Length: 264
Image 1 (cartoon, helix red, strand yellow):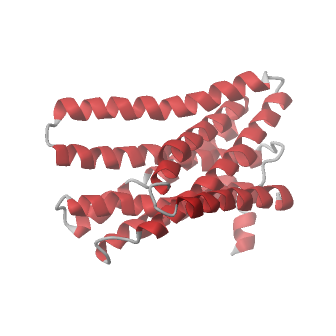
Image 2: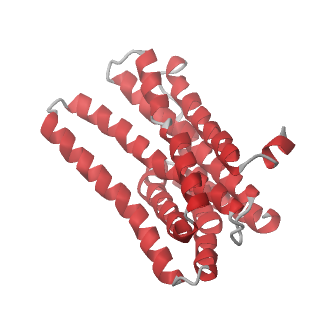
């Protein structure tokens, strides 16, 4: 099985990796069938750990290869990477605000608006995560310096880890809003459907448009850093054991860093 994965086409590798992240999202959403609530400390710990993994992956698997790639393409590294990085963050900020305003104007039902905003925000965040996975795998086929199969796969693992609480974060609140368990579950897994699609799109773009690869890598990194800083870390730090959660964030970063440097 491992040999099959290693020897597969990068698009197949991307599909398998993003289907894994989708499966974990579905697993998190399925909690609605078992519990009314999930232990907050466990969820916060997973958020903190995955935030550390994603921050490390943003540099070692995305930004560093973007810098190396820009240099090899005779582009201005600091300019291309900076523009891509900030564009990734701005994309999420602007999209969130546009959708929030549309909901305010079209629906005065606070419960429906809150639920819709929750589904949209998590779905929106899953797009750059899927894109990041696809770009990471696509960069391997382009033989970009520091782009490795292990690094790309560990990036997918880090995203998968934080998808479990995201699945819970959609299905459980929807259940509280009086939706059935089945509908809550279906809405929860629908938020993760975009990841395999975005992953394949990102991989195909990288394979066919090499000159924009550094921009796409840094764009994905910027979006992931924004998600980690604005969503994962603040949410995890609401726990009373904030020092322990901070340690898990550092542990996640260290694990990703060691794997990328020692084995990549």
